[in-house]
Length: 77
Picture 1 (cartoon, rainbow, N blue to C red):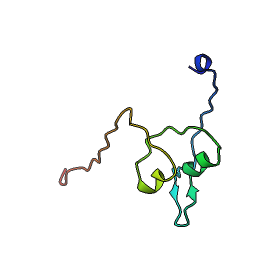
Picture 2 (cartoon, helix red, strand yellow):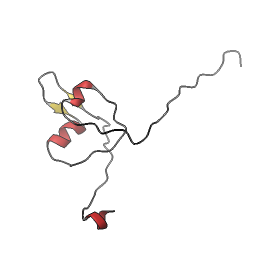
Picture 3 (cartoon, rainbow, N blue to C red):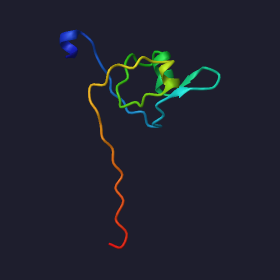
């Protein structure tokens, strides 16, 4: 796809796992700040929709869903 659309990409994992949001003073942190600082152009992840994040980024329609479950053993077994 890179060749066909004439772009390059780099992949990285944010080691501190701080996805981001907005500080009370209105500045952003985490990947939201990275986007605003132009450290990268696009961020792709299962980022939870939060109001404070929506002030800094535009969410697109999800292209998939994930299901999470918590498993707890039955007592007495």
